[in-house]
Length: 288
Length: 329
Image 1 (cartoon, each protein chain N blue to C red):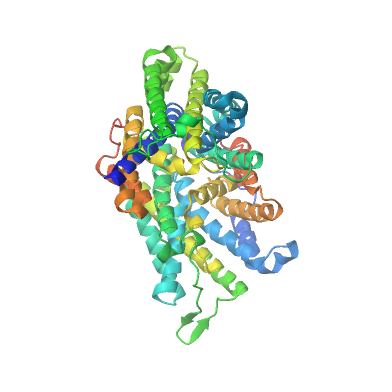
Image 2 (cartoon, rainbow over the protein chains, first blue to last red):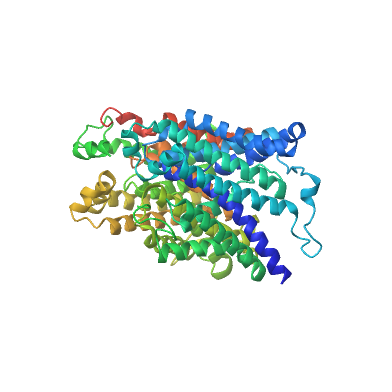
C-alpha cells in the first residue's frame, strides 16, 4: 500500500513537472505555431541560473529571479531569431529551435560542466512531513503547491487581464486580432517569454529534486509533447489534464511493470490518436 | 498562402543552365569513382558509404517533405527500425543479407504505414509533433529492451554475409565491394523515386503541396495520397536503415533518436528540399562536416546546432535552391 501511495505522490509530482513544461510549450504552440524544441534547455537554464544565484540571493531569491532571467533570455531569443520564421513553412521553426536546443545544451555543458550539480535547499524543506509518510518531504509538498499556484495564476492571467485575453483570442484567430489593432509582434514575444518563464520555474523546482545536468530537460520534453497531444492541441486545460494523466500513468505503471513506464505514455498517445484524434479536450479542427 | 498559389499558377518551364543528362553524368560519375578520388582528399570509403546511406534516407524523406509538403520529424524511427530489423534478423534468424534487408525494410515501412493511418488528417506542426512522439517510442523500446536489442550499447554480434546468386557468390564483406553494393541499391531506389516523382502520382503530390484545397476540388484523394507518400518515404528510409546496419555491422538506439530525424530534415533543407538531388548534396555536406568537426572538437553539438540555425536564417532554400531564386519568390 505504501508503495502505491509512494508512486501516486511521485506521479503527482512528475505530472506537475510535465504540466508546467507542457503549458509553456502549449502557449507558444497555440499562439505562434512554433514547437519549441529548446524548451527543455530553457528548463535547464532556469535550474542552472538558480544554482549560480542561490549563494548570493539565497534559495528563495533564486526561485524568484532565475525564472525571470530565463524569460528575459527567451525574450531575446524570440526577438533575434524565432520571429524571423513566423509565417514560414513550419519546417523552419522546427529546425531553428532544434538547432538552438543543441547550442544551448552545449553552452550549459561548457559553462557549468558536464557533471551533475546539486541545488541546495533550505533545511526544513528536506525534512519528511511525518514518520509514516517518510518518503514525502516538505519539498515535494512545496513543489505541488507552487505548481498549483502558478497554474491558477496563469489561468487567471489569461482570463482576467487584457494581454491574457488577447493571447487567447490570438490562439483562435491571430489575423483578426491583428486587424483590431493589437500589436501581435509584442504579443508573441511576451507569450514566448511567458512560456520560458514557466520552463525556467520548472527547472528550478526540478533541480531541487533531481539535481542539475546539461540535458535534464530532454527527458521532460517528449512527455510534454505527449501531454499536449493527449490533452488536445489548442486547449490549455487539456494540456494540464494530459500532463497529470501521463504523469500518473507512468508512475503507477512503475509499481506493477517498471520497464514499461516509458512505453505506457506512448500507448496512451496512440489510443487517444486512434479514438479521439483531436485529443481529450481539443477542439475540432484545431489540429488540422 | 498566396505565394503558394502564385508558384502553382506559374509554369515551371525554365531552362536549366546545365542540361539534365550532364547533371546525371556528373552525379553518377562522382559516386562511381568515389573510392578512387576520395582518399586523395583525405576521405575514406566508409565515409562515402555513409553519404549514400544518409542521402538515401534524406531523399526518401524528401518525397514527403519537399514534394508533398508534409513535415515528418520522426523519420529516424523508420530508419532505426530498418537497422534493427536487419541486425536482429542477421543475429537471431538467418545469416542472409537480402533477407535481413527485406525484413528490416518491411518492419520500418509497415510501422510507418500503420502509424500514417492515424495521423494523415493532421497538418503542419501537429503532424510533426505526432511523428516525433511516435518515433521516440521505438527509441525507448530499443533502449530499455536490453536482452534483445543490446540496450544503450547497441546491437552487436552480427555482420553482413556474402550474397549467393546460384553458383555465383557476391562477397560484400570487404569495404570497397560493399560500397558498390550500396551504390547499386541506392541507384535502384533513387531511380524508382525519380520515376515516382515524375509520374501522375508525383504530380498530385505537388498539387497537394501547392494548394491542398484546390487539389481536393480536383478530386485528388488528398488523405490517401499523403498516406501513400508517407508510407513510401518510410519504406525508402527503412531500406536506408538496413544499409546503415550492414555498413557498420552495428545498430544503436541513436539511429532511432529524434535528433537523427532532425539531421534528415536539415539535410533536405540544406541541400534544397524542392529539388530532387538536394537531399543527397545536403547529406554529403552534413556527413563530411560532422566527420570533420567531431574529429576537431568535443563541442560538436554547438557546431551542428549552429548549422541548423544558419541554414534556417540564411539559406532557407538550400544549396541547390539558390540557383533558382529568381524564378520563384
